[in-house]
Image (tube, rainbow, N blue to C red; front, side, top):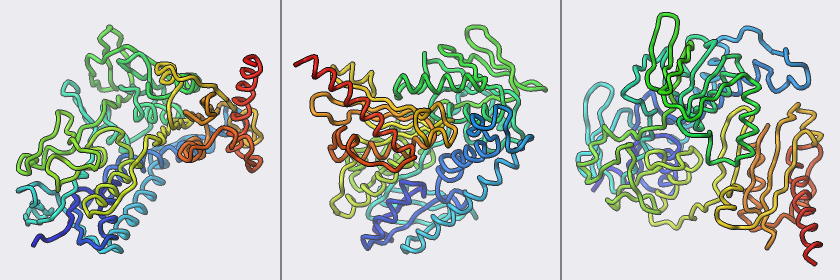
Amino acid sequence: MPDYDMLVIGSGPGGQKAAIAAAKLGRRVAVVDRPDMVGGVSIHTGTIPSKTLREAVLYLTGLTQRDLYGQSYRLKEDITVADLTARTQHVVGREVDVVRSQLSRNQVALFAGTGRFVDDRTVALRESSGEERLLSAEHIVIATGTRPARPDSVAFDGRTVMDSDNVLALERVPRSMVIVGAGVIGMEYASMFAALGSRVTVVEKRPQMLDMCDAEIVEALRYHLRDLAVTFRFGETVAAVERHQNGTLTVLESGKKIPADAVMYSAGRQGLTDGLDLHRAGLEADRRGRIAVDEHYRTKVPHIYAVGDVIGFPALAATSMEQGRAAAYHACGEPAGRMDGLQPIGIYTIPEISFVGRTEDQLTEECVPFEVGVSRYRELARGQIVGDSHGMLKLLVSPEDRTLLGVHCFGSGATELIHIGQTVMGCGGTVDYLVNAVFNYPTLAESYKVAALDATNKLRQVDRLGD
């Protein structure tokens, strides 16, 4: 008889939710993770610390209050790394305690160490003392997550040439910084350091940034970041990064040279699978360290599942949690609801971006007719109160059945606001619901009513001309 019904390798969002879901169904469950990584990358170097750092930056710089109190307004004049990390350490410590408490409360055994496969039902646990012990399970869930990808051509030192993990351990706020990669992580950190007063240069080999987002929203962010003195170098590739006594020199293939105090690489992420001995379980990973799974998150070995960043897109903490639960339910023979395509995406730049559904470009490409309704924060009483004149909400509405095809938001609270649109879309609601609904006043949520009225007025004009 195996030691456990389910063994989970990794305690990040996906692994943690898989373990707790199986435990709630009365199964014997164990989790293996390094003692210093309980809660996974999400809590220690990813989602939680980066979002906490962002809050600290917004608070200490007073950036969001400058429309009200003038461009020179700052809460603290000389912001140190200690100021920024104090909040992060507090939140991370609390979150680790929450994870430990949840696992303990649900009688999930937590083993400190690393795991590797011995065969398809047995994992060797290497404890911090160096000793190994074998754990067997009927089902195994791989939830090991990812690490930042590091190009071989770049000499990382963790101080002047960094990846997104090292950036949280900076000794001081750099006066100037090069960020290589204009993806989600790159743009989030570009926003933060620009807000702190660093001169930021973003280098991206693609012709634009955040290409999964609505083009108008991206343009609004780009304009806002240029206002914070961010320079963009699109269509450029880094040839070399030179470390000098007084800083770094980033050499581009076009011949340009960019001096800066520090360089941060945000070149995607690599699955943490190289130490798992996957071949012993009859599995393999692709060159990015990712494991292939079916719609139930099963690998090609039916009793071994994989969830979270280690399986690739969308690689979000929120989706990883749902994948973990779905895998646990399937392994336990419990019916599970399927995740639909209406997964909200939140990007914690300054200001935030969030969206659900399709973009204008996607709808145009698919020859799907749509009408646009827009609301701007500067026209809302709450927008004036909070001092956000840049924010906007955009609704894409079907003229045929008046349902929402996409919702795109930019500005304060965007990642919270998006859930209203997600709910209306998920329940098959129409733009008329938003027109007729009463929203608290003054709120940013009122932007839905304003945008809905804008869209329905345009639809009415089209209908009149068609009569």
